Image 1: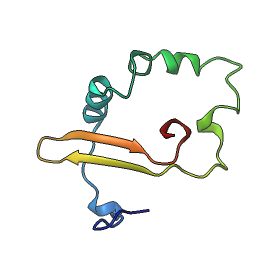
Image 2 (image 1 turned 90 degrees about the horizontal axis):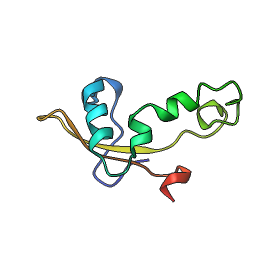
Image 3 (image 1 turned 90 degrees about the vertical axis):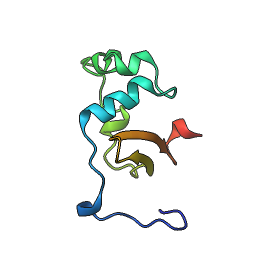
Image 4 (image 1 turned 135 degrees about the vertical axis):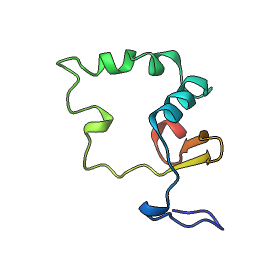
Length: 89
């Protein structure tokens, strides 16, 4: 999936994204809450009864289409959106 004027980038042409960029984006984005950045969800996912119903365990599901806008000069994730996941509806 691509918008007019954009093409899918080959893996050798993708912008550099490091863990600090991702953590800064999550910490400063209005789309994510404290439970997602403080590790609460990660702790819940460690329960014995978490099981195969978790989204990340549904390996046969279609991958989500995600768009990310990155400011390469400032090494900053400007915007990220999931186009076809349940939360984007």
